[in-house]
Image 1: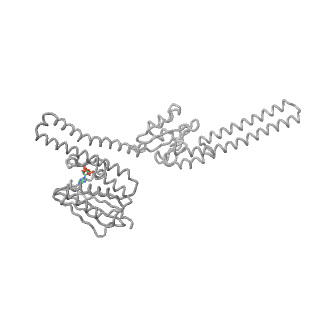
Image 2 (image 1 turned 90 degrees about the vertical axis):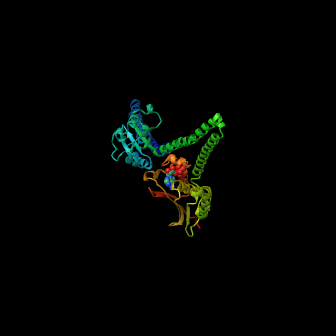
Image 3 (image 1 turned 120 degrees about the vertical axis):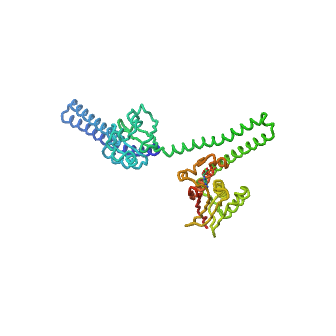
Length: 420
Ligand code: ADP
């Protein structure tokens, strides 16, 4: 609040004080002059010092009254009260994008658009506890400013159940306060995601690590003397260590891609050449299943503006998933073609059990799996599609996943052709 609000408040206060000081100086000067002139006239006519003194005291009283009127004006303007100053208040409040409410003696006297949208159009004139209908807000606003201190409070569920706000009230004059609400919903969700991610990553790493430690311990006693057991256990240790390595590599990829999120790739990549290379690599590394990959490359597909290493990873992850989750022996079709308006379309289709619609929106979340056991047994880290999503976002492209249960899945990536 203070970042947005203070400069405006400071400007407003300076302007108001300037006007008040000017008005105050004029009144004081006038009252003082009248007092002295009156006293002089009285003395000139009456030659009576006492009468002249009475006139002077009367004039001095007028000066004090003028001063007190000036002070009241200042207090009124500081409070954003009625008159000329309140006319200025409305545009100032409207210029603030967060909800802001002005309260005097417990009643709402002004509210900007965002505040009326959140709390209702009818809140002007209402008791602030009715306007901001939240128990924590009521307690806070009825406390004296000295008791509640400067710290803001958190409000959960104001406006909608999952919305979170930070509320702060600042007293601008006795009985008058500005209440400012700051939407923290997005920040809270991001923080939750970060905490969940750290917890999930730690869990994913701990599982193979515990397994490795367990087998190494067993190998170090008598079980290790039996060559057959030793070979089998060492095989498991190797597999678990490989799984950890894959996970660490994926985590590193993800953070690298995220770090480059706002830097548009500056190189040009021929996706047709890249797809052929990845196809070759998979054919050699994935045995018989590698032979099921079918490449269909359209005529004159233009190159795209992209990062070669990241697009190769995208192809590996998507074709790899289609090979993993598709039925053995069924084709995995990779199609590359020109789309409308300078777009290049990459489609990867498989024949499988498909994915139920309720899972589709969450597939690109980190560590989200439809069937965790199956994913792990197939060597999945749960990060493949999250990496794909970030790569597509960095390329300002589009990712669509469509699936028909019992038939199969089609993933479409739309990228921009490089400028020629
Ligand atoms: P994983 O390492 O588990 O494969 P991904 O992020 O690549 O992680 O995919 C997330 C989940 O999406 C997978 O666990 C799987 O349940 C589902 N999935 C991804 N691709 C396919 C596909 N082609 N067919 C069916 N399910 C898929």
